[in-house]
Image (cartoon, rainbow, N blue to C red; front, side, top):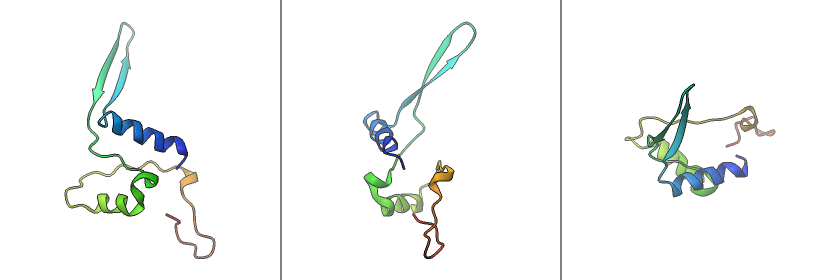
Length: 83
């Protein structure tokens, strides 16, 4: 993950995982505070094992990941996905 992703997670945690969405209409702009996230993790902060443990919890219902083409890296020697 790029370094700025870590900053994003750190900032979200400082805001209790709340963020604002602006809905712009022709006449007005409506701001909504979104509070649907319960946890935000980053491998540099929480470690890969911490993330996998969180995903495996029985109470975990939804896991949302954003992975771009640059995030899929194969180990040249084994051909396995490099996590």
